[in-house]
Length: 400
Ligand SMILES: Cc1cc2nc3c(=O)[nH]c(=O)nc-3n(C[C@H](O)[C@H](O)[C@H](O)COP(=O)(O)OP(=O)(O)OC[C@H]3O[C@@H](n4cnc5c(N)ncnc54)[C@H](O)[C@@H]3O)c2cc1C
View 1 (cartoon, rainbow, N blue to C red):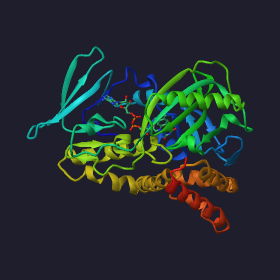
View 2: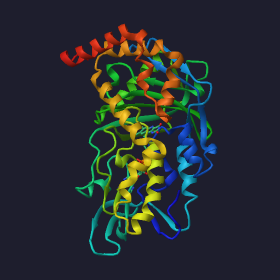
View 3: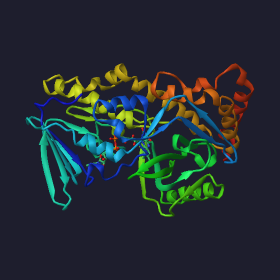
């Protein structure tokens, strides 16, 4: 779904090129691939078909694999994908790169009431007027910051990722496996991951780490993780220097309450459409963008309630709002876990269910299923009681 050709659209992007890089691991689900295939030839930008997940224990000395018979997620050449989508914009859409939005204002009573001020690459200040402003500018949205009526993300994780020419060394099919280092007190907030990928035809892996702590020591933490994994011979680097490194944010507070104010609408991370637990936001960004495009013509035709339908429509068409609500509940539980003892009891519980763990995990991502049902089974009662006891101890003693 695109905005009708009768509407003139200007996209302001601060990067110098759309395909200059992407601050994301770029893993997409089966459903997201389906959405993208309506917009471009997504298959040309899929680098790895992922069938397995490997979860490491808190002490990193044991792990379990869980698999599916079909690819459940896909690694992508994300910059290439963004570039190809940008190449398919209609003639009514102008994409201006190197344009950093600084502020915006509203002058009520004007036909084009919104004034957006931005800086161009040479630092010259420019302003444009428009009838409607869409804030698709990420977790720390300048558009959201411009109005007291719009909510802002406050619960934010900071992530650091490096891309190395190299390979994970364990498992039967490392090219088709993602590795998660979720468990352990080192992982408070989120933890680490490894995903296979290809960059410019080179076999690479992306390795990242995320926590609530956004200070500069983040890169050190990732480097410590990389060194430990190398020492344990879990990964091999072909070259010492990473090909790419970057830091980024994801919102983990759930869908923001106020994403619409008159003629301004937030979409994607700016609106909190990112999994609070899984930190996956590509699907939310796409679904919210497509849904907004359906509602904008009605808004411009005078229906002042049209944009406010965005959550209802995202739920009706892709069950996105209930997905994000479930993710907030998982995050609530996850944030209660603090110590290695607690994470070890959860790891053991998941390991017992490894045959079905990944099926449940991908159902939870794309369908209306809960991840918790993989654990809440009668036969796990003693293990669940141990987990609950550990969480209680974490809360009462503040141990880590
Ligand atoms: C390290 C990391 C790994 C991730 N991995 C995954 C994953 O594997 N799968 C998944 O589903 N999700 C993942 N996510 C989350 C996902 O990348 C985001 O949820 C998604 O990209 C959100 O899309 P968006 O368009 O809303 O925001 P963004 O992707 O952040 O895009 C915002 C755009 O706005 C531009 N911009 C920002 N401010 C301004 C400004 N003032 N003026 C002009 N332009 C501006 C930025 O340059 C950027 O191009 C990851 C996030 C991080 C940080």
